[in-house]
Image 1: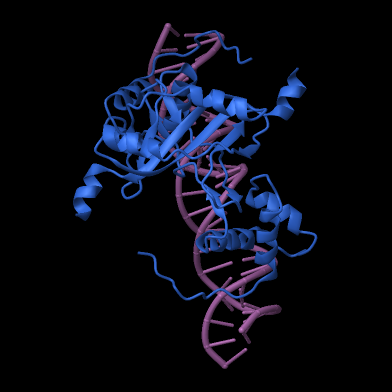
Image 2: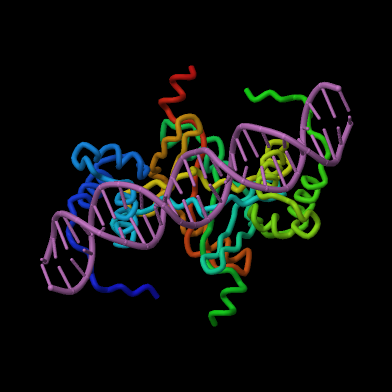
Length: 135
Length: 135
DNA sequence: GTTCATGCAAATCGTTTGCACAATG
DNA sequence: CATTGTGCAAACGATTTGCATGAAC
């Protein structure tokens, strides 16, 4: 699908440091956090450049963007807790009948010193409509 | 915490119709989708009003906002698939050691005619630091 | 010296807000 | 008539983009 085989990327101190910072922290920084950390080293650093480099690093597969889903809010009159399926082709969101498994929270609570109260699951894949179109 | 016991809301045709539309669809509309559907009935409808009403309906518990997490992107040098815990107090995001359960995808695929390839889980609750502060 | 990276500012996109007027109860 | 809802336009915050200059190779 996405073929940019050419490793057309040059070396850049800024990008290098962004990657190092991300590798050196357990937290999940925002672009702004990285920007603040790097202002000292690169006094003229711009947010635009931080974003550009983050996108390049994601494209290179060196980092991940924590992907909670779409960029805009979606609303739902179905109040019961339920999981969602999101089609990677057409973006459709489907409610799932899969029973909500509250034991998962317990497993987290037993494994860590966190207190998990609830959770969401999003499944990603291809919906039946898009599956047909491709075939 | 949040005490606005008074049902201080009046009746509004626009809000009523937004709720009806949400109840009448299986999709998970965006504000813009609702806006488009309602332009005919309310030629002067504004996006601002759609958003205001959606927020009110969420506050009333009549609809849900599909909540994928934070408003800004977060980045992560840990590429392996893993689940996340999000602290509802301080917003911290913690990687979980909980093994990724690919059988969940199979359960979805058996239950539906979708083809789930991967999934994310986000747990929500209180992290240990915030837990201490509250106690 | 061609191409990619950068800083800067302006632009974009989804969402929120301030305000004067209209609708509700 | 007191208060909430509305349209409008401006404001907002996170992210992207156009452009002239600077660094990499």
